[in-house]
Image (cartoon, rainbow, N blue to C red; front, side):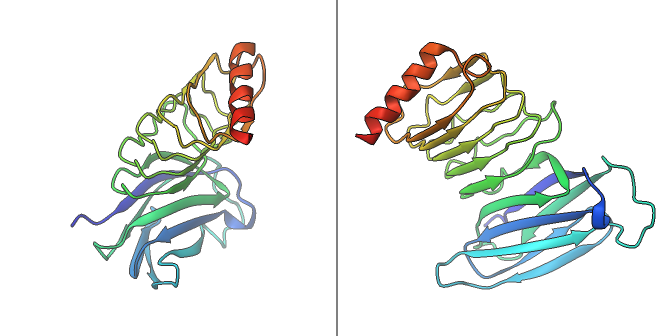
Length: 225
């Protein structure tokens, strides 16, 4: 059985306290999670089976903690996360802290249910075609210009505000409950059937037109009755 991996490039955006990256990972079974931080060393972290068959743990890694003059903002680090247990599934991944992310590869995690990160590069493409179990996607405050969610039929919550998306199609996302897509200067939002949608935030004119706004509001009103 193939070992699951997550790969991405991290870019420093602030260097107070030396620059800190937080990784939050949920796993489905006992495992040792190995993190190659891209700066020459690897750390290993034991994960133990929990009552809910789900593990949640936070990692903090400090780059250049003792330097008086911090390195320039924007230095990239290639980070790779893997498990030693082929039966372990990475079901949740998020980044928090003084880093932006790019070139995120979660294609080896088909059972991933939750993904939270900040896309850095406008040229980057986020491939979620194999993450059919994804329920929560948070990619706000980034530089995405496109987002293909056609394979993510289980998606329940989408937070993609403050990017550069011009079009967004939610035609296959029938499980969607929460939608936050404001501050994108979106030209078109495509949505037709969302029987569970209960919450939506957008900007009229900048994100959607009047007809689409009324369509979404009508969907929410129907679902609340």
